Length: 517
Image (cartoon, rainbow, N blue to C red; front, side, top):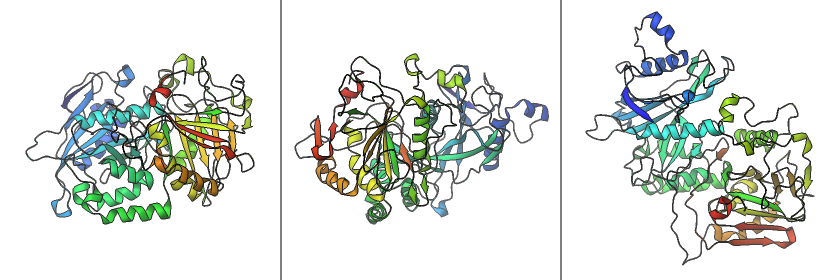
């Protein structure tokens, strides 16, 4: 729940923003982190000391649903001579530490990030005759902030957000987002750490797919060269009716060349997926990942989760070789060890709090495995194989319905516990599959219909509303794959390679929505 008011209006939970000449006594009462960000805003907009704000009525730290305390909205005149149109500039307050008293973020020192280390911004083209900024971008930013708080995954420049719905709930083709550094906002040193500013850039589905198949930074650079698609400051125009590839067909050639040369930077997705060990009896549940009827899916240990997160967050391109990091015996169990316990406790059910001690889980070599994906995640298998493994990299599916993961690795990835001798290996609920280049080529031939659906099948895809956000890190990582415009098939669909003892099934969503899948 939020309300709109000038930032100088009194609020129930925080004082108004002080002007440039605020008395020292007033400034001392003003939250220091908030004051530091306001200072950067005043540097950019000295003539707008009290912009309109969307304000959370009940603050997150008082039990409200909105993590962002405020979203300020400024009018930016742009620069017509540089193809920068007039637009509205939105700036969030709350992903960083505004207060320094641990009510939201744990203070970790002045040298590191403040809170999550960033705030979000958004630039929306101003429509002719528009006298006040639309408020829907504030709710969009709240949605992204909720994702960050709940997952504790941070964004960085080049990431993409698969939203699967017009950002303003209209009929617009702008249905997804990329993230980049704000072109005007400079990093701020606050008493509680450093804050950077990441700008949301609205993109079409075709542009999102290009970012997935290649990389986000490459698509951002192309958008900067097309004034109507963003221009130098990457301003979102919700009325844009053409993709950059329709505006300039030559740009598709640049993307294709980049994919061929660089492969894909998308290193993983959160999706509806599961795996079964076909080499052991179904009733043998000891240290098994298989989800059995009447049981709960086994939970990833904190160390496995952290290893997957670090693998995907950093890219781990060490010495030009993708490397999976060794398990760190000094790291404590728990997904959110570095965060305030109260935040995580509010997000977990009692049934999910029991984490298997990492030291008690052995790595098992499996003889035969069965992989299960829903329609959207299955459609990315060719991208995983062609764009990642054939370039000597890895790709991870992390389940959003059960705490498990499937990582495909190539023979060029160091540090994996799957080997050419034992290509299927599991560490608790984390399965690794090592595929040789020869087998990848064979799989791509057999899986060709995943990207080229047969004629006569339905070609529409019903998008859930409102869809959860998704996130990807560098290399790109999409953490909520929920409505990708993928080819449509009659389900279930199965692929099998008996000589490799590998089976892949593409199943309806309902299979994964049921706890008995």
